[in-house]
Length: 189
Length: 189
Image (cartoon, rainbow over the protein chains, first blue to last red):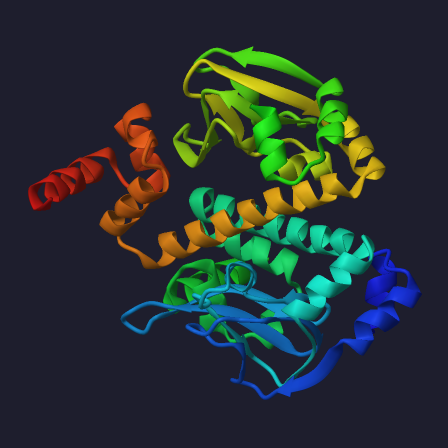
């Protein structure tokens, strides 16, 4: 799978071998964490199989789902890793998952070696930045039903893979509200 | 000023000349816009003097302040520019301002020429990404008073330069709530 992803991302195949030599493959059972909130992260992952979510927990123990990350996505607690401080959120496996992992220090070495890795990182950061810009706008401006419709368009495969209360948490609404919205939509369509 | 900024950002001085040759200086009166919502943006700016805000407006005409951008910040509607689609938000001058501007096509040419510009862009995107991550967390997890305290820590100079109702809009609260929080804080400290 990596070959395909990296060729789509304009990484020369000789460089992919260099990357692969610096990575490990690890599996995470459903409910396991790639990063725990409160620990200082030092690795980046590429999801080969499975599904993760980024999870905030407030002081009262309530969870908020920041993002869903299915296969072919890079996962990391990027700000915390770069700033060498504890992560504010966890990255939790929602399914049994397999991740290709690279240590941050090795990632920095790769980047020194060839500019294709800077370009790759730029692409990842651009994608992340755009996703956050979109999410901020949706949370500020759109009502819950429109946010749910957008979610279905953006992640058509996730509706079936993710439990409804987690989708509600991602949309920033109560499970009861999501349930009402889904009934309305099915009534219409 | 550019010399200082670029040397802090590890841009060789010879490269700064190349950048400057591709830029224009423009002034924006208070209330003028660097980017209008609904138009497709094609430029990046470096604020030399003054202050801007990123502004969403909903269908009912209510404004939401996404960010404040004082001098020494790069401003752009980045996702829209890269995706060549209309911007969802405006970038409005809150004070009479001066901006060093570069067209996106020239920026792409610069990046082809030397990797220092990729590194600069990485730095800007990293900073933007971290700011958005922080803002998302604060909006989800912190109460309004704590968000206001954080705002004062992060932008100590802006309290005096920005009208209170805009700070309230940035914090996602009503002006009356901000006014109550400020009274409480002054009572305590």
